[in-house]
Amino acid sequence: MGAGTTTTALAAEMRGRIARLVRAAQEKSELSVEDLALKAGIAPRTLYRRLEGNSAWTIDEVAYIAAILDVPVSSLLNDEAPSAATTDAIRQIANGDPIVIDMAEALGVGE
Image (cartoon, rainbow, N blue to C red; front, side, top):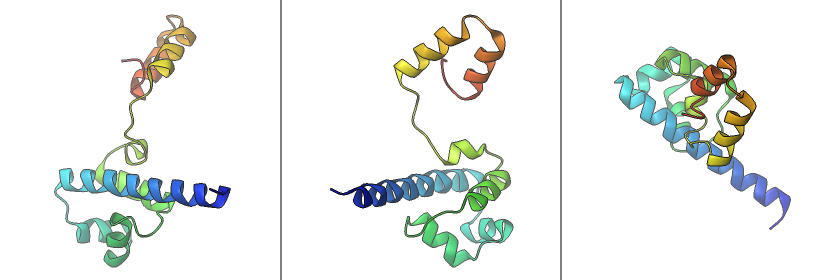
């Protein structure tokens, strides 16, 4: 498998992940896809293609949608919990520092 194939597979995976996370947030908000598209300044057909994972998202679209749905942008990009190694590393780095601990908790790490 060449580098281009790997990049293409990763891009498709990311499109699908964002689509799934946006769809879940959209459904939770009870906004229709059409209403979300209108508020985000995206053509409904384009948003449907994005939600099907058939076309790439722009960072602006993700940011607008996050603002409209009142969720952090990060929640539309990644739903994976941090690994135990990451959590342990954050705890060691924090060394009891309340600012680092607060930042880690805000990111969902080390809880």
